[in-house]
Image (cartoon, rainbow, N blue to C red; front, side):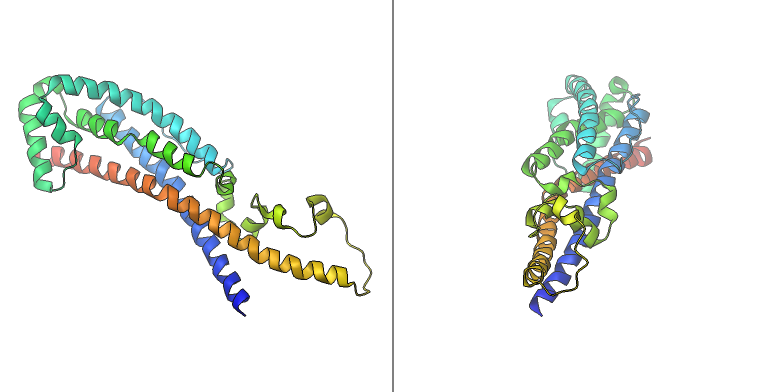
Length: 256
């Protein structure tokens, strides 16, 4: 009875973790596209809108994202240097550092707008560049991937994450290692049509049932570990985008 409850719990864990990973990939891409739109509009860049490639693995999608973000990072670092040269060190530090209150944000932006608008032109692009430079988004993802570089979860295709728990467990890279009947070839070999009782076959069935339970648990553990490691960088993406949007809103509504 306990094993039945354990199996059901693992099935739910697989479904929840796979859905979360699926959402993470789309959040990464959506957040990146928002950043690109901001830079294209306010810095005159020409970053293309990117899409999730569901037929590629999670790892391949993240690697493509990192490559794109590194191009963006080089652009904002160049703009950041221009900003540093153009404004006071004190004000630059305030923009680049953590700002907690809305009033503090307004004060910093007002100072920048009133004293440096003639030098910087529109201040939205420069502010976005400074924020993005210091957030270092590509390094955030690369660090996360390094922690789970050998995780079989990353080899799943994005589209695979929408399958049922049994389907995910079946294609999970470690499942064949726990197949008590041996290799894939042996698993695929046609079974005898004999109906006579075989203690050997009965034992294999029992062991395979136990192994299936273990496979679900292994799959759930691996998927949840990937979620745990990727969550901070995904949330960081969302926070940076939200902060940039707050700054843009404040500049547009209160200063221009």
